Length: 447
Ligand code: TRP
Image (cartoon, rainbow, N blue to C red; front, side, top):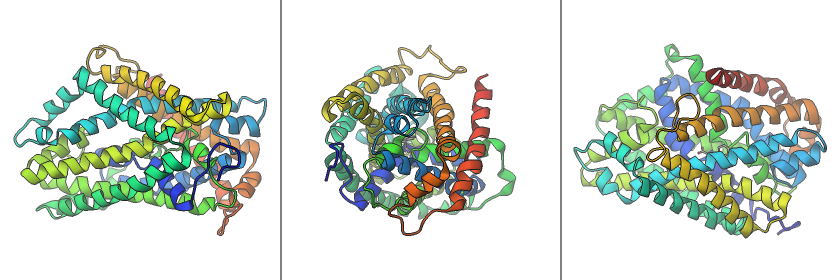
């Protein structure tokens, strides 16, 4: 099983479950519906799907091929392919992004845990769901407690290793997630008045185009596919040489997209059926949905529990991939053993996450970027700066430094349907231009 002691995926389906598990997360179930609602529904969904195909899919292939080629995580990959050059910084940026993203990801996942265990309270009829949400996230003790529980779960899985930890748990959790989602969709689309939500969500209305919506869609493609920070390089490094990368990348992108689309099918029909606001923003999941569940009587508590369980499972399989980026770096570069690497990385990230959760209570006076609280600042710094920059540099690395001919050779090894010149064209021109526009815009917001 292991050629070099680093670990390897046990089977193709196991790898797909793990990579899809990484991709499918809060990004699909929490972030995708609220930005779709904010940017006008159907038309945003259309742009998003086009970007997934023309930007997301080629970058996914690129990261996987780099990792498999070098059999090393992000930092080691750039060191090996471009020794003595500053390209290694791209790898370090990825490790930094993993640190920052997981520290607040775990806090949001902790909220989902709290909602799950207290669905009776949070989904109570006639309650003010907005103020329940605020009081739940501003409670210092509860914030620290649920964040800690979630980080412990991540550490336990990642310490178990590639095949026996990450792969095994993804194979169990992903089917459960799909099943829970289907139960919720059936409930949602059969509510009286669900049709209005379906047409808002699925009919593209060209009047809703906005540049901002376009930028948000590019950012969402990176976040949802776990790209731009070496996560898929790391997962690619555990792939066997004869694995068909273009094919597995297709499965991962398709399953991630399907889950996001399905999550919208839970949320929009319900939001419209109960006359709530689809553009409610980040609160859509934690304020609007509990309001929906509270109007379903006792069954609402059960649906609420199922929904937040689903959100927690999706978050867990993503969070372990973020932790794995930091862990794999210390295994490859600092020669730590896996347990030690996981525990040290986990504790450091947990400590950084304390700031995020305290950002809603004891540290609520602190704003880091442009008046944003700690969580929003971390999210902005990672998603609008580090990820697009990482994605841009990865595309430039392959397209203009290392060379698309070498990349094609590496990606096509073991592939039945091989990638060709369209891949090279997308990586050299389309991907860099699309990301550059987003990046300039993010810098413009700060400067
Ligand atoms: N893709 C995950 C989501 O949609 C989040 C995530 C996991 C991620 N690993 C990542 C995002 C690496 C960027 C990079 O929730």
